Image 1 (cartoon, rainbow, N blue to C red):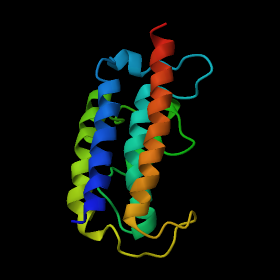
Image 2: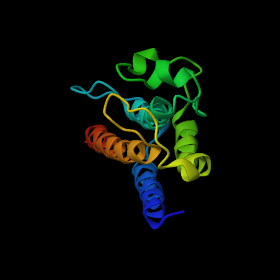
Image 3: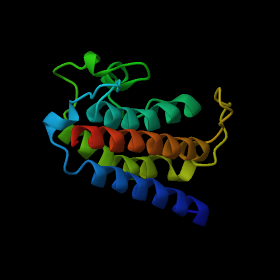
Length: 154
């Protein structure tokens, strides 16, 4: 694997660990709270982060990924915790999925990072480009979770 790709996967793993450290002390009950002025809760943000990486990989490759089809109805763009059902993963389950995802992506796609595909609507043509985008997206939701935690604990 190229050095640049090793760095990309190190970033993916490092930022994911930061996210998981941020929610380490969050209880299932706290993960459900939607403070005034917020649209979603911590649990939704975590599921959305998990889903987003796989959706963008699917968007560029046009191949199905390991993500459960139910994730789109629970955590897709425009959804909310009102869409949760008894089958929606718990906070603990989401933490496990998120912890395993970087390695799963590395094992599945490390040798295909620069493979060219037809461009997405954002012009991305490679899995490498998708991962850069999803790392940025994860950072946005990490900030949202940080704000949610502050409101919940104030």
